[in-house]
Image (cartoon, rainbow, N blue to C red; front, side):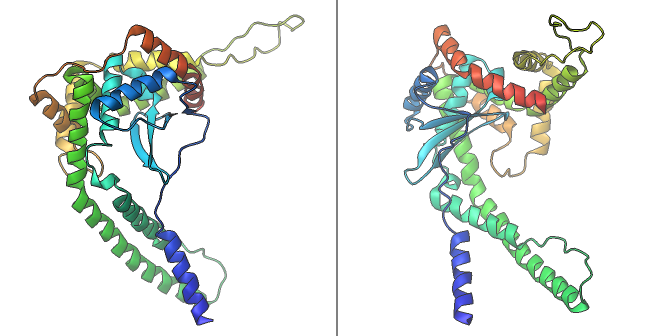
Length: 332
């Protein structure tokens, strides 16, 4: 019996420590090459410009962000594009954004390597498992209550040790991760140009402003008087049916809101980044340092460009997803 229990415990440990391979997303917001040839063609040109592997799948999200990762046994590259960020960037800045994300494939970021990432996820999984929850105050015996207290104390001790391990892991690898971010920015300059890369990085500082704008637009839509044409035979005294908010309005207002942010506010955000994020960051170096590095480097023109026809084709390919994600954001 004891051997069976030990074997079961070993199986649980092996399952918890298993490598996390990930998989290519299968949801409705994934674009394949057949449905988005113009977007993939641009992505392939950017990848070729920095020596990265062409992306296997592109997923659009509702985040003011973008990310890149390798998934599956074949380590297939997947690009995640947040439409709120994509929509407020111009065509050159979008190329710089793609260059930065693909740059992670060639920047040598050890934190993204298969083994280090698996080790980090395993530690985080153990930490989540050992964090004791609040035991319910039910009518149980004193012995059960004492056992719950002792178990909680032991688990808290184990969780504390695992948390220190996570902190140590982060401290040992954060410098390499930040250097990889700087190299990815340099690759973004190579394909998108210095000016576009700086603009893209400066836009990343407006994430909170973008969230505020979405909340404001959603609230205005809900307060707006809603009307719809009355059909034949409808009583004039009958209440009017609600009119669905326009998803396209969200993107127009979001672009207008961020474009109206004054230079003084942008400068304040840059100084805030310098004051509050001078310490080691878990995933990215402070944005003001990234912008300063681009400013100090020799100015370079864009190596990859998109024509107006290509930009229009990409917009048409994203039209369905723009409507879907805007509707979800307006619904809250």
